[in-house]
Image (cartoon, rainbow, N blue to C red; front, side):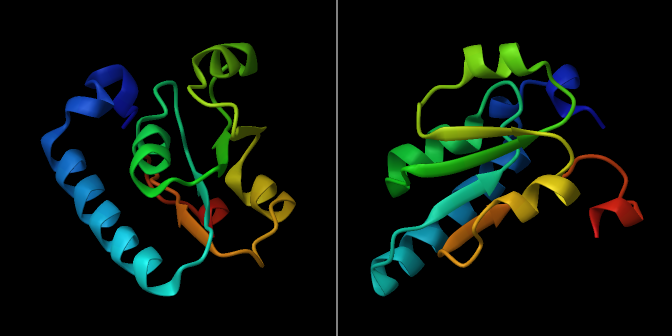
Length: 118
């Protein structure tokens, strides 16, 4: 499903609940461990999760992996300069990120799973 073209990602009630539960869990973990985390995900055109995690978790190192949107449009929509946009498939782009750092990785696929995801 191409969720961004069917319904505004920010208004989907189940996605909102999922996002808030993850945020609460991450906040508790980060409060206990006292580490700086980087966030890796799919920002899409609206960067909804990125805005929320930056604002509420104070994450300042973020990576958005995008394959289907035009790079110039993503750069224009990017809400914070701390978001690094990596163009291509996640299977290729993840190896470019230093995953030895504490990381929150939320690859929120909304298509049918295939072997390329693994």
